[in-house]
Amino acid sequence: MAALGLTVDPTGRWLVWAAAVLLFGIAAVDLLIRPRLRADDLGLTLRSLSGATSAPWSQVEMSLRQQSRFGRSVATLELEVDGNLLILGRRELGADPEQVAQQLTALRRQIS
Image (cartoon, rainbow, N blue to C red; front, side, top):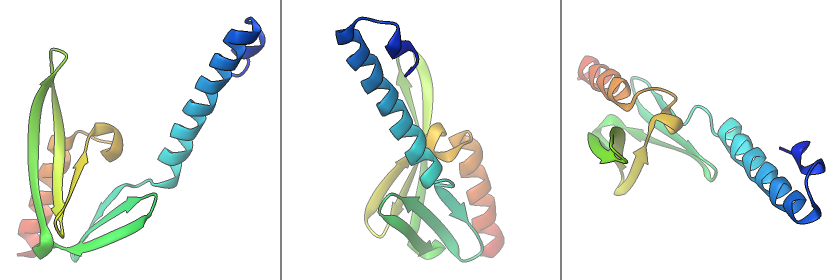
């Protein structure tokens, strides 16, 4: 995108460079907070820009939601931890939310 900014007129150059900075910022955030969700025998750990939050399984409520958006079905994983609702999609999880929900449910049952 930055190289493309050199080939357009001055007004377009600023728009292309702004888009390049935005894409760079998104990529940087994705690198900083990966993995977003981690599960083990003790519970879940959720990472965000403000830090990591850990919660035992007893404080975690989980549900899978299917919504139709733009003509296709989109799944999201909803986690309620200490009264805070976190909605994670495929991009945040790095995998299909349905598969993640199945794995979390299986892990939770193993521990119980």
